[in-house]
Image (cartoon, rainbow, N blue to C red; front, top):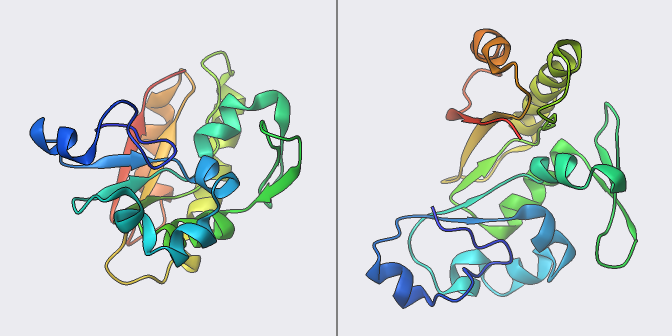
Length: 185
């Protein structure tokens, strides 16, 4: 899956991607929210038109940035406060807002907002992270209303994924289209 963080796969045109038979592209919700803005992308016809791409697009939720921008964010039950890596401005991303942004972007597959613990996180932290991610997934499901767009749950990070794999099927919000496992970071 080629990564088009800012709605473009670097050094490749849509024709290049078709030539290598790319079937789906990943775009980054957090980065598109900051620049150029999800409302502008929506006004311009959504990601498909914005990117000149007629195959599926998956948007992440911004959950990976919960990990990667560790020194620029604060996690709470309600969501995550980020300091923009671009200009230092403060942004509060909730599960509901992550879904709203992805719906406005018009992706075919969107991901639930999640916390991504580091590979060095201990068992108790990973357990609490999984519980928070599960509560956030329920909120994402309640906020998702766009027809023709699939909502997937995700668990990523930590070194104790066996715990997550055992618990997630039991605690995951029912009727999510699928779940995605991502490795340790």
